[in-house]
Length: 440
Ligand code: IMP
Image 1 (cartoon, rainbow, N blue to C red):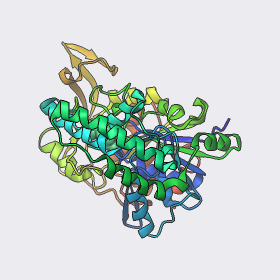
Image 2: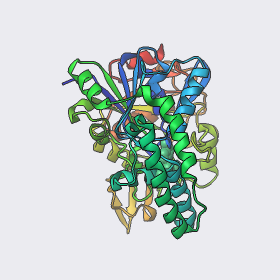
Image 3: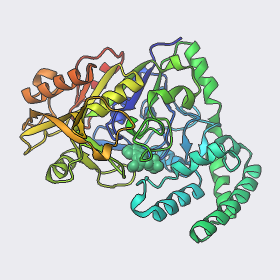
Image 4: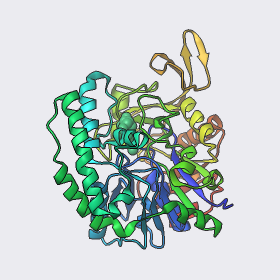
C-alpha cells in the first residue's frame, strides 16, 4: 500500500490557503484528486504574479505531467467546468484527456439544483445557511434520493440523458411551483445545453476509481485535494451551517474510491486567524474594527461569491478537534502577509466558558453561539514578512506565535506561507516529501 500519498485539507471554515499548498506539492505527485464539494470551492494559486482561481478543476492542472482527477464524490457543475477549462486553455494551459479525468460516478450539479438552492435560501430568510448558491446541497440531496439524480457518465449517451433531463425538469418545476410559486425552468433548453456538455467533456469522462487504485498498486504518488474546511463538514462541522459533503481526510476513501490507507500523510492547512463565509456560529468572530482590519490585511473576500468574509481570532479548540478528526500529521500555516498592522496583540482562543464552566475541548454538540471565548494574548508583529524565506527571518513575535500554535495543536508546522507567490514560502518542521518544491 502506498504511503507516500498526501492529503491536503482545511482545518477551519475554508479559505485557509489550500490551493497554494496543493500547487507546491503537485510537481512531486502523479495524480491530484478532488474528492468532495463542487463549484462552491475557490482554490487560489498565484504563478509569476498571475492569479488562478480554481473551482472544480484540481490545482495540479497548472503543473505539467500531473493527471488531475475529479472523483466520484464531487458535485460536478459541467457549465462551470467547461468555462474553467476554456479559461485555462486561453491562458496557455493544455487541458484534455491526457491530464484531466472526470469520474463517470460523480453527480451533475444541474440548473434546478441552483434554482432550489436560491429559492430555499430566500424562503429561509434570517434562518438561511448562507450558501454559495452553487446548488451543492440540492445536488447531494438528489444523490441520496437517487431517482432524480444524474451522474456524469450519463452524458456519454446524449440522447438518453436529454430525455431524463426533460423528465426531471418537469418534476422539479412542479415542486418549485407548489413550494415557492416559482417560474418553470425550460427542460428542452437544459437538454440542449447538456448536448454541448457531452460534446465538450465526453473524452475526459471515465472510471477514476479504478485508475487511482491501479496507481496505488504501481506506487504512484497521489495528492488528495480537500475542499472547504473541516468545520464545514456535513457530519462533523457546525451542522446545519455546513456544506453537504465529507470534506475532512475521512471523506477521501469514499469520495475517491480508494482504500482508507491510501490517504497517506495528512497535511492540515490553517491561517493564523479565522474566517467564515455564510451563517453559523463563530465563537471567535470579531464583528468590529479588529475584524475589519483582519479582513483588509488578509484580503478576506470570497473567491467564489466575492462576499466579505467574517473574521476573528484563531480558535485552537476548533482546530485541535479538526486535527484529531483527520489524523493530521503536519500543519501548513498562512501568516498575514503584511503583519496585523495596527494591532498590538494577537489573540488565540484556548478555551470556552459555558455556564461558568471552562471547556477545553471542542465538542460538536456544544452550543457554540452561547460560549464565551477565553483568550491568550501574544504580541503582534508590525513588520512586513513577505520577504522572509527562513524562520529566523520572521519577526520574533511571529516566531513566537508559530511556536505557540505548534504547542497548542501538538503538531509541527511544516510550511509557513508569507504571501501569495510560490516563493513566499518558509519550510519549517516538515517531513512531507516534495514540500521543498514549494520554493522552486
Ligand atoms: P454550500 O456549500 O454552497 O451549500 O454552502 C454551505 C456553507 O459552506 C456556507 O456557509 C458557505 O459559505 C460555505 N462554503 C462552501 N464552500 C466554501 C468554500 O470553499 N470556502 C468557504 N466557505 C464555503
